[in-house]
Image (cartoon, rainbow, N blue to C red; front, side, top):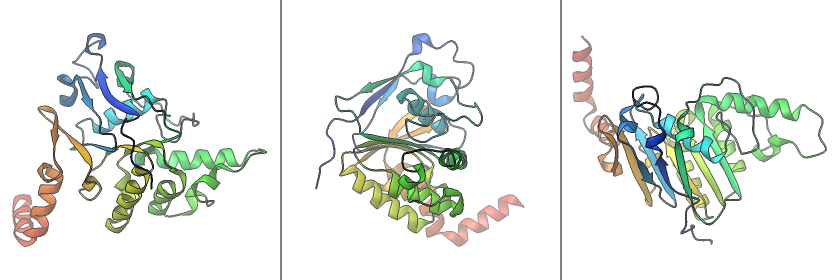
Length: 254
């Protein structure tokens, strides 16, 4: 069995602060970016987590675009555009790359995965001497599967190892059982010299043991542990004291 690469494909990210036009406009006004200068990535798995609106997807998107991925997801070969909505952050970050180059890569974005599936169907409907694109995703149109099944088809069939995989909220359509299966898949790919950068709300997906966690807070980007994240603490507290938590929630609503 192969061991995970010691030298990550992306070692760190740096914000070119002296080139930022203004820290009062989007996305630079976000609390996570106001004092941000950079962060070091784990050679195996790096988690970027936080509440909605804190900028985690914006940061992940910028990393992906700076690497060369299409803003709406896919491999480096995808160039479709459904709606030009990505921020300009990617223009002001620098990726410190490792010595080794990945042989595979994918930017998985739950928000625009439908657009990616549509583009694959469109490309495969055109004449080509090569194999169909969908064959790399299991052979069945992603639109002809449930949302969760189509997500998992990419993880299982398209992710081939020796790759850089950037995942934005991949748990969006996955059951808890499928999330655990995805953890196992991540481990297999890590053992095949892959590096992951993941934005997620799921404590299950945050549980990969050899990883680093960065949490976006009103005070900026902070390094933390799984057990210290709000996602883990709130989920644990709710499941442990469900009846009391429900009473409190319903009373507050009234």
